[in-house]
Amino acid sequence: MNYWLMKSEPDVFSIEHLQARPRRTEHWDGVRNFQARNFMRAMKKGDLAFFYHSSCPEPGVAGIVEIVHEARPDPSSWDPKSAYHDPKSRPDRPLWDMVDVRYQRKLKRLVPLAALRENPALKHMRLLARGNRLSIMPVAAAEWKAILKMEKQLEKLRSRS
DNA sequence: GCCAACGTTGGC
DNA sequence: GCCAACGTTGGC
Image (cartoon, rainbow, N blue to C red):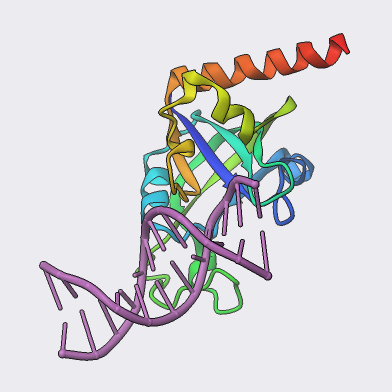
């Protein structure tokens, strides 16, 4: 089983939006970057991913989702009406893929980007690498654990105050 | 709104 | 294949 991180702008699509979807499941479509696409292609059913909120007042890890359907062609890529339309992609020659994710849980408290940066255990995390802009990336098992540990610590701090 | 960093495009 | 120009991402 592998771990991943998937970015989304909460104004557009947040962990709460996913939670409100029928069967708490949604296509993760609109990815238009080759590296991100290739990571999606490596995802297996049952893999877990952090749902990361980006481009918002408090960016950070907001929740956990499960990959419930592996990569297959993304129909929005050849839909001229879609904001994600790419004329190079056609139904007979698809260029972009999507996976399905299912809501697993929200973190008890959002783990902010600023806190991730302060954790020495995450020094080499891809998300934190200089200039990183990938919307989908792998997460090492040790990093996954470290972030869940931060969630617990943040929760403890809150319950104490 | 600014700007650094990166990916993509297209001329040569 | 190089590289400048441009567009996008995303934190601040």
